[in-house]
Image (cartoon, rainbow, N blue to C red; front, side, top):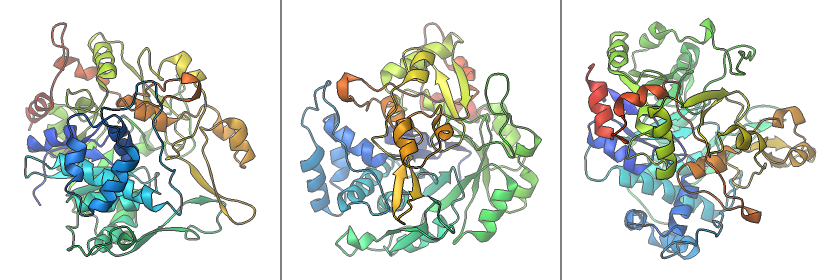
Length: 473
């Protein structure tokens, strides 16, 4: 496979949507859709009326139309729901998800990749988070049904995924270990996914996508290279300045005077050791400039992964109202990024872009009503009776503690699920009329985007970003 110099970062949820990924791929680089919460994105797009008909057009190409009919009957609202109405929710994922939920996830991932691959023959990837384990098997299968070329996965150690890809090629049943707090050993609980239980039709073998894990150390790269259940094809080497989730600092968490995690020498990646593995790798987190692309290739990298610059483009999935605020803040130099060590229920540091009028604004950010009604970041735990329970550090503290969670683990946590949905215009109307606000995220180099803007130039395109970056190739 011939690889591009630039990989567009997989920014969730639905910031890296099919429209952005398609635009990047049409420029000859690797467009990447976010695989986070695509079942939820699907049902909300349908409830908003699917303006333009793109979702329904893609669904027409899904191999089992009986599934599509069930989804349409349940969620599609011609003309869209009233702005004051709440979105209808689907079930939360569990170790035993309903058939409908698996169908939604398969179709959601299929639709996103199908649309990203239209109108060109270039590569398209999809990005998943290992921390969000429960939807991943059915999501990967849906992406493979649409012919995804590369699967990227971060926020964990996805050692089992390469072997799972090998089996899904032939629609075989797959399983993987699930993290359960209180379990005796790591393999006590497994998630199983059987394609034939959902797709009641004999289908030809699928293409096996290549697999690029996101890593933040040479040790992790070596572990995945040697101990994965199948072939790893390359690496994304991501530093702590990247947007969204960051790997925690190695060793004990220490904070600076601003309350942000301190990264030191131990967190620097030994690129020589990664290069010696003989696989292509791309550098991510603060590498989005022509000079840094040149530097990356001189260091032996195949290129760079860039998220922040693409997040601000006209083609990205950020809702237009929030994108306007983001670009105005960038242009006037007031955009600030805070690496919050506790915001994410995952326990990973999370970058928050402080913009007035959003969940990132301090008074809203600190005082937001706690809730967990989407559940993508819930933790599984072992109850005293041996059953599996589900809890989230971002749910109401009394409920979290009642489920056995420690109060100190809930302090400062935010509902990323609702915030990220609001980022792209799919904000929920909660009981009492509260309208969910976005929780915006960008990388530390956000102010570098000012060169795309001016007092008279209020937006910029994917093509401008690609042309700018390739200026140093």
